[in-house]
Length: 293
Ligand SMILES: [Zn+2]
Image 1: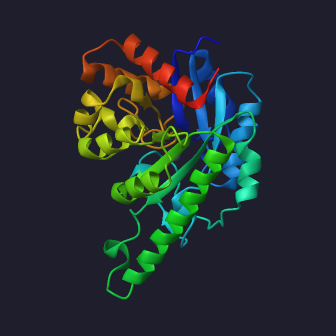
Image 2 (image 1 turned 135 degrees about the vertical axis):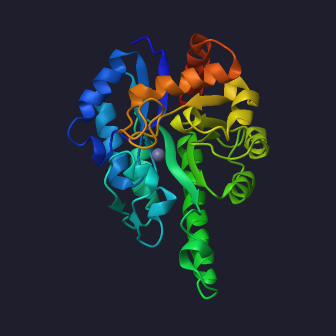
């Protein structure tokens, strides 16, 4: 398959695609777009591999435990999910089992460990309120950091890069990546998925040798333009995070990997270069970082 684009972060392995996941994958591959299916827990990680095994080329897996599944249970029905027509769900707490994840991580179709990282969006005074809860927040953060560090360790052991989720926690993320020497040459580096920080944040992660990847948000929000214009072209990649955050003109619909094209188009427009150039360079970056062939 001649790969024109790669969606480096999609969740066709989630229930939103339970009925038609293979149809979605087939039409994406037919358009010359490859994809990495990303797990957020043990079962969705395993399902990502099962999908990848069914396709001789163009579909790979990432395995990991998302920070929202490391702590207290809560109902997810955020605007971004509801607007995509995807029903809310209850997070399920999972203890990180290193050996179980290692068995998935060494699989030949697995090209990264993740998504893993830090998510402070739902911890903090706005949600829990009051002083008494402050310690509780501290514990949540500690737990997230601990589970994340173990996955950094796993990535290093299996010699695969990280796919990092980070929400409202860029300072702590930077400290952990630095302390753990997660970037090259000691670690395998990786990408900060759904990058939503400032250009100043971006430079810190680029400085550690990490890549940044961007979703459909860049087609309707202008907050990332400075980073999109200035980041080195050999360190950025495109992704959908399907089924969430569909790009313009599909906003409000269920997102799918095929739509990664719209994100590449926007990137080309912002940088004043051709779509072909963006496609060629971001595909080259994905192949190099994840060892896709
Ligand atoms: Zn994701």
